[in-house]
Image (cartoon, rainbow, N blue to C red; front, side, top):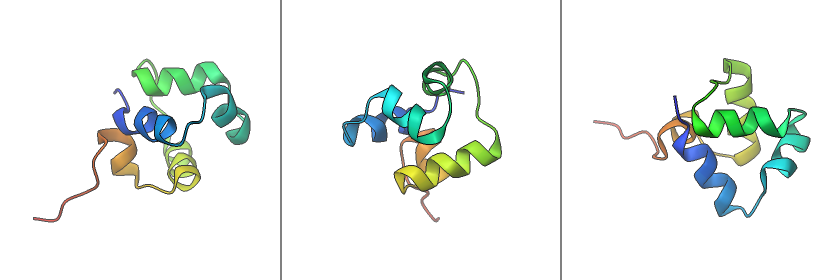
Length: 69
């Protein structure tokens, strides 16, 4: 699954993939795979990314915040 919001928030903060990868102790390639849908992060990585960027997991995946109906 392509993580639309992950790439969006990274670019909004003007972070390159290498900076984020180093901060989170993962490879740049792994981050690239998450952004492009070649690999899906596990739950603990989703939580870590959510905390790092201070956004919801829903935002990381869809690029939109969760809307209550």
